[in-house]
Image (tube, rainbow, N blue to C red):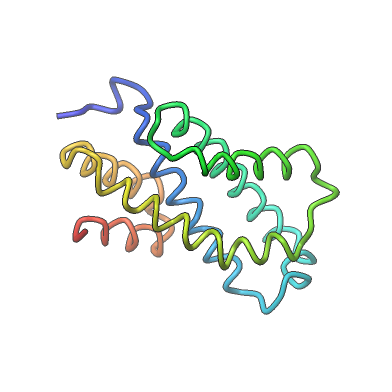
Length: 148
């Protein structure tokens, strides 16, 4: 059995970081009708930007571990753009990525989750459920991973 509490952060945790961050983005943006409405709700806007930063940072580690194809360097580049050019972020670009590109990327991430050793995958699902037990939509989505 993998004891992630004793061994520290395993690379596969970054896959789950991306998955959870993507779920959070999807949940937040679903409350809005357009990019400008999202932009003008600073809490929601800031949370979406933060989750995209998490996705980009975690993707960097997966690229280094060869767990993602090189084409996903664009995810890291996007993270760098929103982190370092914060006041130049295009709300429509964030909106489009949230509904189009993120959906495709989440499918890739879900496939990577399914490739994780079953014992480690189970332990990671449980750990992420525990960390997110206050967010029912995250817990439900993580439980669905047992059926993949």
